[in-house]
Amino acid sequence: LHQQIIDEQPYSELAWFNLAAAYQGVKLYEKAIDAYQYAIAIDDKFDYAYRNLGDAYLRIRKYKDAIEALEKVLELSKPEEVIYEAIGHCYDRLKNFAQARFHYRKASHLNAEDSKLYYKIACTYYNEGQYGSAVRQLESALKIHRLQHEYNLLMGECKMQLNQTRDAIHFLSTAIRVRPKNISGWDSLIRCLYNAGYYQEARQQTLSAIKHTQAKPIFVYYLSAVLFAMNKPKEALLFLEKGLQASPKAVKKFVQLNPSILQKTQVVDLIARYKRNRPQ
Image 1 (cartoon, rainbow, N blue to C red):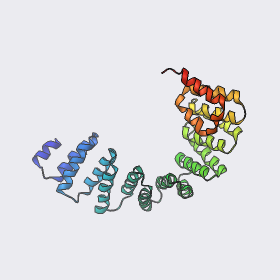
Image 2: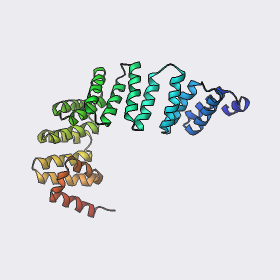
Image 3: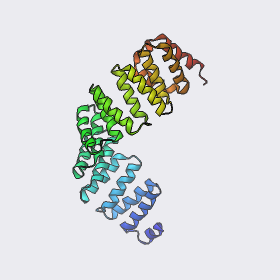
Image 4: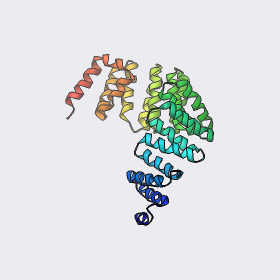
């Protein structure tokens, strides 16, 4: 039907726009892009065509093209939070965190109650290693939504990086309470406790993580690492072997927690023996 209308009205920007939207609706983004460009060629002030064109480019991860189209929307129409946020997202994907942050801030000026924007700004700072600046943005986000899992998790990670262990434990524990089956919260909390030398508490939390996450292999490995730190090598080797049986690839998380663990001959021998005997 849309193609028929195009045949009848080849110079109608609305006909091309509707054809493009139809393609976009069935995820034929390349065809949608071509049709939007025809619409824009007929009317280069057609802001909705630029808007949808930007979205289509974003869907196929052509972020530079998406930015160009979305900036045209800002030229032609009233500034909108969603457009600034979308441009910020594109820069984020391109790892241009300063520009991503600039556009997220523009969006937040239009909607100061959108906690997600403060979180996204915080992520850009975190990715640059500016943990103190990330904390300040997360404080704003948490004032609006105190129990958001992602906000507490990132705040905990920032506090860890700043060696503020007690605060890190508080925020990571909150993240776990909100989403007890989520692996990331347990992972961060156990790493925090382990690195701070709180081995008894780390052991307790690792057992809780195993219970709540249906014994994910990463936590079996973490339990082994904690038991080694508590000078319980027999138990530690037992859980290391269980981890190797469940997920050989996850052993890298075990080593990352404490690289010096590879100085233990028993550990190296067990990993090597398992690799030799593992079916190819």
